[in-house]
Picture 1 (cartoon, rainbow, N blue to C red):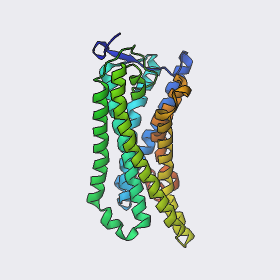
Picture 2: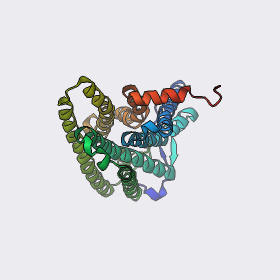
Picture 3: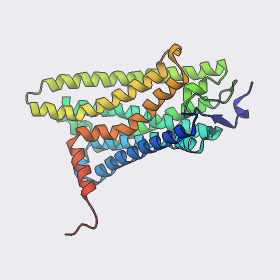
Picture 4: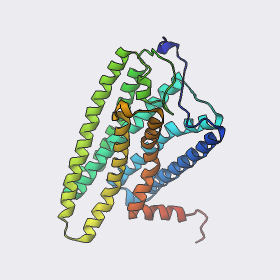
Length: 311
């Protein structure tokens, strides 16, 4: 029996046991991380530099890319370091910091995706009121609300988690510090207390999900009423990337947190957590740039630009 005050570090789950596979995982993670940095970085710079993209939709997309960079930078660098140096340990404080920032970025991203659904709903279903409902001040307030809500959620969960008593060992069945594997190490009363916080969070997140679903039902009904094929294509090109991002994010995260214990295993938990913590931040930029002509044009101009180009 031990408590949280006597624990100075946790041991994370390794992706592989052999040195060759560990190095292979390191290079794979490095490639994914660099791709995420490049893709999201290009979107951030393109939106910032191109005044044609200074609209609510791209303002929210810029915030999404910032959150993606933050979330993937919270998990992958430590996983890469562990694979490269053949280590598994993370300090108690480091685990708390990683849990805080991961929950902060992921929660804020989910709230932002909900706001982006509202943006698409107003743009397609109430276009005449778009400028009034989504003015610059309103957009800043909504983005700030998403970031602020994520921060409060992170503070709540991190403070609650690291005030519990740990009654088991310090081995986490995950490649980063996450709530479910930490709860498995806690005493029964601590587990119940944190479970109550998780249940409240699930209800809030389920409410956001219902809002997104209802918004898209209204959006698709409005799209079907558009007479021109070009208008339908333009509406879908702005909605489908967001819907794809939401689907990947919600499906993988929901399966990770809500899957039955009977099908749970360390290897399955590892794969599922990788899918929802690493894959969405890495592919979101690609999804948006593939379906959005304005983003592709802005990135193309950004790549072709050089300060030394002759007149």
